[in-house]
Image (cartoon, rainbow, N blue to C red):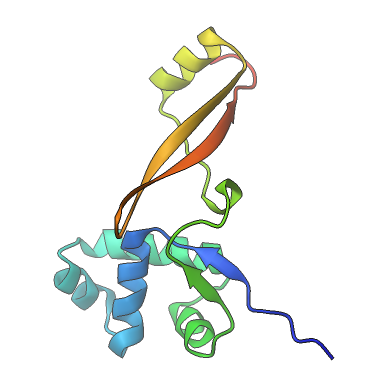
Amino acid sequence: MTIAPPPRVYLPPAQRRVLAELRADGAPNRTIATRLGMGKGTVESHLSGIRRALDLHSSTAVVAHVLQGRVQILDRPDKPTDVAPVHLAPAPRAFLLAAGCCHRLTIDLPDGDGLTRVPAKVTCRGAA
């Protein structure tokens, strides 16, 4: 019998910091926000992103999965598809639509050691 390895999930640095604080002592969101110098709403947004990435419905389930080794948190993406899609603001999207229908670009993602350059493909559908 072969046991499958735990799923590997990339989380951006800010989400990893929030997760580390949550794992440390299960502090409330307001306490985590104070420790990290963020607003409570920012912490809640990061926790929502973590729950979405792990397909879990509570912060307690997130901590349980991490502590029990049922998920491996990556500090940089294995491949470009591990990164959440980038949503462009209306003005840049309109520019891209005018310039053509498909673009290849790179995105610099912050990590603990500086920036990681990740290739990306932007496909525009329809008019702005």
